[in-house]
Amino acid sequence: MNQNQKIAIIGGGYAGMAAAATLAQRGIAVTVFESAKQLGGRARGVNYQDTELDNGQHLLLGCYRETLRLIELVGGNIEQDFVRFPLQLELHGQFSLKAPNLPAPLHLLVAFVQAQGLSWADRLKAAGFMLRLQLAKFRLDRLQRGMTDCTVAELMVRYGQTGELTLKLWEPLCIAALNTPIAQASAQVMLNVLRDSLNQTRADSDMLLPHLNFTALFPQRAAQYVEAQGGKVHLACGVETLRCVENGFELTTPQGIETFDKVICATSPTAAERLLRGMVGANSFAQHAVRINSYPQDMDSTIAILAALPQQPIYTVYLQYPADCRLPTPMLGLHQCTSQWLFDKGQIAGQHGLIASVISAEGLHQDLTQDQLAQAVAAELQQKFAFPDAPVWYKVIAEKRATFSCNAYLVRPDQRTSVLNLWLAGDYTAGDYPATLEGAVMSGVKCAAEIL
Image (cartoon, rainbow, N blue to C red; front, side, top):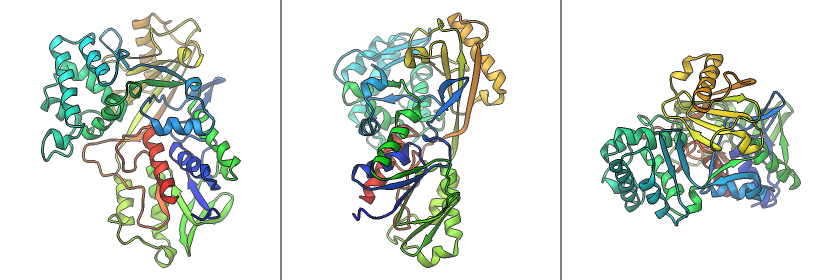
């Protein structure tokens, strides 16, 4: 490609910075526009009480190859940046599954057989189900002819996974991976995650928790990498309008109007819909947009898909306790409590006494005030781990549109649009994965690859 072409990336989250770093690696100077004061999008650092937090806790898996590769490309070190430990699912006092140091998939089958908190019959049912999925290559249409998707709940019933087994194993996995209740969640997307994390090498199922906040982990390093290659990263500089002009695109920002040859829109679905709707409404669109007539999804359809994407929340409650307060493990779950997953930031990031409680997807917790939610979480910590009655301080971060709802049969927009040289990047675009960092990164890399 022409190295002198001007390329704009709208959005400095993981998708946008993955695209930017990929292009910069090939010596292409890009310009990134980010509306916020810091990079990272929905995986960003937050400062409160002189403490570095994240707007939400994210867990990486060993199978997140693109994310881990790009972190190292821009200067990170996986062994130094993360706490890494073998797959373990711990619901405090109720269920425990730990993968032994054996080759995959044997490590998983042994983990199921040795799991604590399930009857022998349920353990065998879980192991048998995994064997059946492996034989079907984690494809629903191989499990049953004509079945392209269904909900996770339907799949569990169809293949004999009991209520107790589903409550302790499959439902927590589904909520953690897809951020969607099992009665709505796509079974095929769930199987894609199981395929990549549990069915290849043993290290693919490893769990990685970063020492750094999520802005510092990748986007901030990526910005330095991009700028070292001659690119630009503008913070607090959102794109107000996107218009097609002859041979390119015109972007309006607080810094003025600038034209580019190619654009990757790596914003949230809501922001992308606004920009594309404004572009379609502009008179210049009909005059200058070069459409790809062979592409089956016209711009109106893309906008409609973006507008219809369902959303799910994630609430994160941070509680600061005295430094000697700690959980039994860096990460563990609670069974049928307000808190779903707890992270001990002392063991993960050296922030001793700091606990993060994560509550994914929609639920009754949304009816509570932030004070009530923090009090409920604190009461659980006091009851189960003998923590003090009240924390020194707490902070509730409510991302009410944290991810798209990964529903069965959901139609997602393609990275390509029907307008030549305009792409969409984000974890919500078409792909095998739910709303994960790896899904976002893979989308950004795919857009960059099409430009290259």
